[in-house]
Image (cartoon, rainbow, N blue to C red; front, side, top):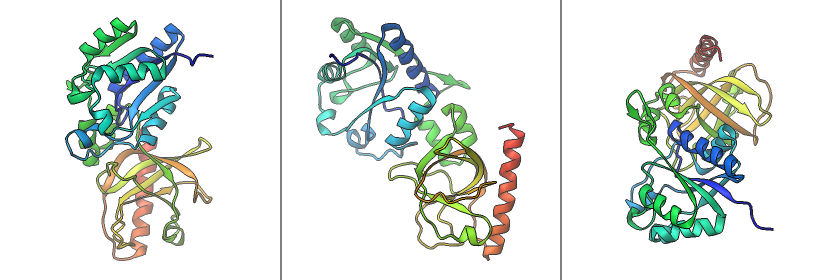
Length: 301
């Protein structure tokens, strides 16, 4: 039995923002029209790391991108290619031929600025012409703008770095998030009457501005809890200097160690600070928790 044909979106999709949403929705639309499986093809590491020799801090890990594409867009078939020197040096026609053959591609959807193949010689115009020769459908999605600005992962990274997650979320079209296994921490929160869960940003993933955020923690069972999250090095309780993501869940009791959870960032509350005592820290966490609770009440969320 032949593998089912695919309508496939090509791109890196860091953050999976509202510009990417236009590609993904068009891919689903084409898939429905031609009876194909909607799919996404991406790279595990950012091509700029190799092409330009510069480390691009990512909004999400590959697993995070896959999660958003599945959860927010209902596309379950997400394929990652390892971006290495061989892929970087591949002539653009060969790249197209290989994905058509290996993935049984019947339709391709790309963004207006998508380049690929050796020295980025593959571009939307060449791809459109080549797909026509091969009898493959091709859509090129124009730039999506908001507030007169082209929506881009680069600008969203700037917003997150500055702690402006509320604005970043407008451009993302969904809350900025971190998914991770809950790690065992110092258990100090429990001793202080404010039980917390600890998570870490994967290597290579952008860390938001250090500080405290109004967040929601979403558990594997689909339930979510209003929470307050500290991103930083926890100067009051630790000298490790490892960036941790410590969330205090409001109205939750139970042990989440070893479980998967997702923290969704909604608003910046205050910068990280060092307190003179655990009591002062605990009192501030409780004030932050009330700030977070009011935020979600005001937003009717």
